[in-house]
Each structure stands twice: as C-alpha cells, then as structure tokens.
Image (tube, rainbow, N blue to C red; front, side, top):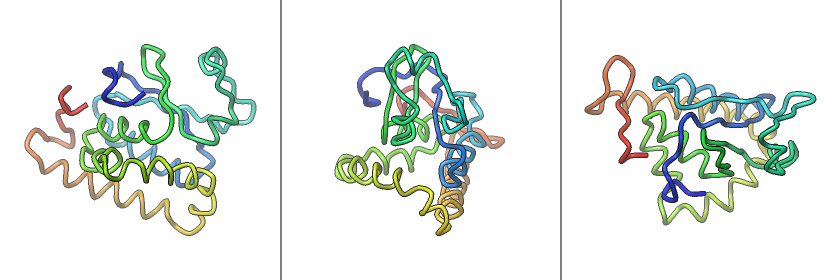
Length: 161
C-alpha cells in the first residue's frame, strides 16, 4: 500500500524491534512528537511475541523482523519504506516524509532499506541511532517554527497525509 492508494485510518500501529537501538530511538522520537495520538508502537521483538492480526494476515515474527510493518485502524497492512513515510507525515515531520517519498529517491530507499534493516544492530553500534535521533529532533524543531505549529504541536491536515 502506498500513501496515495487510500487514506490511512488512524491510529497506525507500528510493529518494530525495540531491542534495536536504531529502531527504538527512531520510533520513540516519533512518539515524542505524536501530539495527535496517531501512532501506536508494538514491540515485535519480544520473546514469545504473538499478534492475532498478523497471524490472520499470514505475517510471521520473522517477516516483521526483516522489514518494518504497520497496520492501520481498518486492518490494512503497510510494509517497509511506506511505514516511515506515513509515520513522519502523521507527526508533522513533512520534510523527512518527503525525503522518504520523493519519487527520484524512492527506488533507492526501497532497495537500501532492506539492507539497513538487516544491518540495524551493526549500524546501531556505530552510533547511527544517536545521529538519527538528532536529525529527527532538528526536523521537529524546524517544523515547530512553521505556520500552524503552536505549543509543540503542529496541525496536520488531510491534504498532507
């Protein structure tokens, strides 16, 4: 599913690897800026993780470990880069969402992301988690200076989603 296919039914439940510093840093940075309550996080790396909705869709914990997965409130599954596009848009970090979704770069992200997902623990050891957390926070500060942002929250319109 792409963000252009159908409107996302909020909240978006993101299944992520909490044991991965890079993943945890990014997801918790997003939640910190989610003033509208559009995102929910589920740690799919927990020992014995079971999710009835994933099971019903035939999605295994191994698949969730390989690529980020999300499910919207209508039960539609989103996998890979599109999860990031929707998550960043949902919290008003439109500049980062545009980088993820920009047509000239999207094919690169779609090819590169599976490698990053496989190497996430190694990349975390090299400090990428802290760097990426810093980038998200800088983007959030810039977004907060835009019209429509007050008291740490930005108005997110349907047109931008």
